[in-house]
Length: 511
Image 1 (spheres, rainbow, N blue to C red):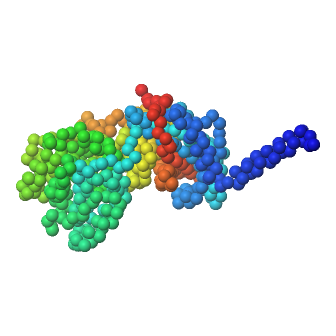
Image 2 (cartoon, rainbow, N blue to C red; image 1 turned 90 degrees about the vertical axis):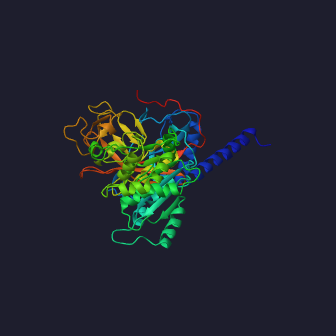
Image 3 (cartoon, rainbow, N blue to C red; image 1 turned 30 degrees about the horizontal axis):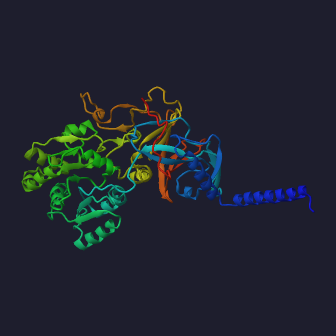
């Protein structure tokens, strides 16, 4: 008979061998897969936990960084990343600034060019859980809205992906009066129809039309949109909106919520005056077209009826939005209802102070030909709804303006001149002599003086964003200013929580 002790030794040896073999097989697994396993485990532990929840110890993770080849940086670079898990939460308000009592990134790692694309990051932080207001997972029904613009086919193509970001699959209709480029003929109907089908393949309910009159100028065609949209109305149409080809609406649900305040059976002219007091003084209290001009059904009916009369009365030098104003003022008692979250963007220079203010814009304008890729900046909204440009402060000195920048304030939030609840005046505008409002006090207040970049504020700007397997990647870069420094790359990976929690704890906002 075999001694009992020998049997026990043999059994223990077999169990130990099996454990060692299992560990060896896991170690041979692809690094990025191992990273996913660790991430899934951590998220399961965090369900029902706190906003900003994290593990108490460090862990390692691995990522394929081959996509960095397309980012304009000079190697070697400093690199750090973090995964953010979004928790949509009922009754949670979108704040201008939310404070999180932890750091955003682990220690940065230096990367040399040509390094293995699979990077093992030591001290990789666990995913960060951030609460956001609950949002619809499918496009909102905006079939009661009719939009109109006048532009050329080339400019329309330049705006195609930006328009699709907010218009696609909403049921809203867009009518485009297609103008001829300088000294050319309006595209033939066959060409318009072919382009229309391409645009509709993006999920947009869009119709391309020639000008109402062959010789209409751009401003005349812009005003004609009043008749075009009203003529093509349906029984469900309650709002008619004029816009430019570089108008961008970041949140159709919030836009609908704003318009819901007004009874479309009454005459309403909803829009925004310019951010520039000089422009307001020159053009008056009118809705500026780049911000979007919204006409209630009742007012649109009046303008449609008065269209021919207003066209004959119009001064030939009047702009498109000015023509709308003149027709409204000449034939109704309706006054402008100003909605300051609609933005004409009649300011110039560095617009960081606008995008880093934490305010949710209902419209943006003048993005063409600028350094602001709004369609990429806005991509994160697919994960977290109205979190576009929402701000989170990490510790005392890091502020994330979602989709635009990650800014570090070396002297901290209490440094002289730093009040995160005021917009930093980085922009420029025309001044008005002898006015108590020299520029933008009426539109951008409260505000504070601008800071000196790279000393008082180190800004990492969004340069790239993409959706990969349902996760939105954001790449923020700070470019070195001299040969003694290196470029810094900070990457955020955004995804939804697997199961929505009912509440977020410790989601604090400034007093």
